[in-house]
Image (tube, rainbow over all chains, first blue to last red; front, side):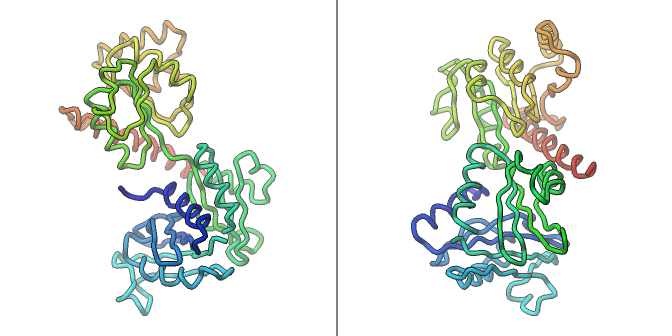
Length: 107
Length: 233
């Protein structure tokens, strides 16, 4: 079963209440043919477990890595992915779109 | 995000209330705005517009950038009739992220064996719907063919602002149904809300195909309504 927004946000709260470090990633802007709509979430815990999706699999790995840095900090981060990115071959969007992902700690 | 804001957001979602999470993109400051509080929020008009469209996104105001995360309740589907079509419709709807409830007072039909993992209410629809009324994020589908069960449910649906109403039955059956509803006091604009023959015209034959047609029509109604609001804005 695919994780719905309900599951994702509920899980974020549950993980945090269980004392885990948690970050929430949200797609805030898209250009071109982005795979997931604005508002899509990915929740990540301190061990790198995650639920949800911001790109249908293309950049989740990179978002999780950044999220692990954000956990424990107070400042959120803005990440941008797209084919114009120099790391396109590693974590670009194969569909040719671009997305902006906001990653914030849950404190 | 502060845990208390996340908890409040989850509470709103659980209670099927809409909410807008506003994030200041520079400072990271956040607030959760419920529909009743939109009028007094500094971003009031744009929040109201985005909520009506169900569309999250970045907005600029007073030289600052804000992200509006729009939360509208998940779509719900209420069906009368624990019948063959419902057995196909329930799992399909669930895959489309639609929360399904099936009402049928005939306990021989409404069994967990026939409907694993579906919320089943083996009772009369007028009672069930009085307890949990249909809201504007709900679709209602009448599938029993039995006026004793479908009519009271349709009556409740027509009195609610649910976004979709569909009723199974031939044109002849539906004409008789409309007569009964008119007799019960419903006007032409009311009964015109009922989609009948039910479902998109895809030439569906089997119960599963009819379920596809019904689900397709529900999605089309939901998305078109939101798309039209978006164009009108």
